[in-house]
Amino acid sequence: MSETLILTPQQIIRKKAAGEPIEPDENEMVHSHTIVVLVENSIGAFIRVVNMFSARGFNIDSVTVGVTEDPTISRMNIVTVGNGRIISQVLRQLSRLVDTIEVIDLTDTDFVEREICLLKVAYTADTRSEILDVNDIFRGKVVDITPKTMMFELRGPSPKIDAFIQMMASHKILEVARSGRVAMQRDS
Image 1 (cartoon, one colour):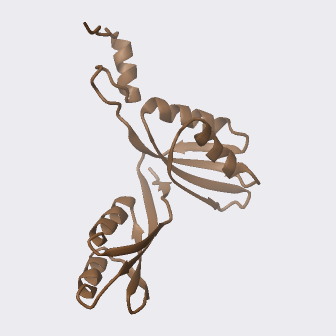
Image 2: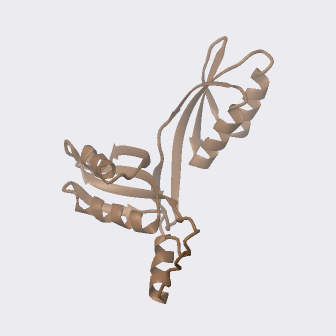
Image 3: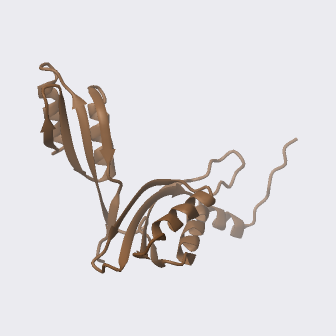
């Protein structure tokens, strides 16, 4: 006989807010989160952040790092997946790292994100025009061409990049390089 767990209204509210299952047969609600971490531009800052994720078993879907308008500060854009409880833990632990200046979860804010993709595809005389048509629809740019391959550059939000790769999958994709997401919050 299976036991049913009776939750108080406060426990239900907390579990819903954290994206945790309320009923035993429910799945956890995991979402993609875009996190910006401003760190001191010093040796080892990046590796400390990556080690924090690795040591706690968190996965990083995408990470980009670059210097900001202040050369002593680097900006890390990290995309990770988790429920509310896990993301809260990630944010707290990132804030505690020595080099961390500020941690911002952009997920529930109004923000702009972009990614760059280079994609190399094989073509024949029969498939060339179809491949170029798909590229035009996605407003990509041909950046290299040989007698057997074409390389495209595409910029935009990640779903656009994903859709472009999916459309090119029916042709012979030889190589894909993606920059990872960069994101910035809009002014309110």
